[in-house]
Length: 102
Image (cartoon, rainbow, N blue to C red; front, side, top):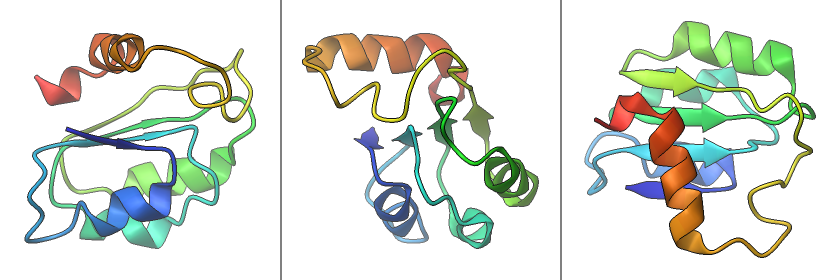
């Protein structure tokens, strides 16, 4: 599974021919709805309260694969990266909210 904090990178490596089986974009800044139709693997988007709600909604309308958008309305942008959290804890969090990977 690929988990990256820059949605542009997530979308680029989630297109046709990717070696990854699933992906997640954590607190994704600068979401471009035009990237959604290019994604070919299951993907989760985990936005914080600071992300652009309209852009995420448009992205979700355009995505064609199994996906999950799970908002973290009480968290600030960067909540998964700005503080020390063991990587295993991040994976457990993502897996607990993302049945898209099952």
